Image (cartoon, rainbow, N blue to C red; front, side, top):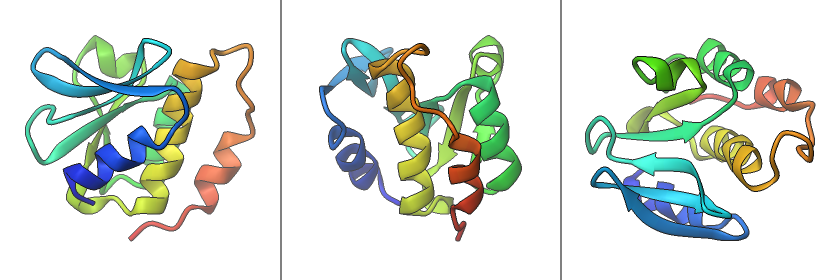
Length: 122
């Protein structure tokens, strides 16, 4: 996965715009950040998951996902090692992050853990 592929995937979600936050490209749905690039450096991206979804992604794809350090990580912000994540796994994680931002917790379709569990890692 490259930064350009990450960007293309993020921009494929409805109502998504690219902006910047703290000198990092970010991707927003309805004004809320759901993903960023280049944090902590150019080899990483970040998806804003729920703590529950973060735990599932890290447990099943530990080679590609780690919690962001500090308080943001405790809230579900999850770093993605671009070279280690497969497009299908990143697409699932990014969809979860987009749902958290675009739909909000009351409108989100769930049963996500099962979908994460069925993703193949590479």
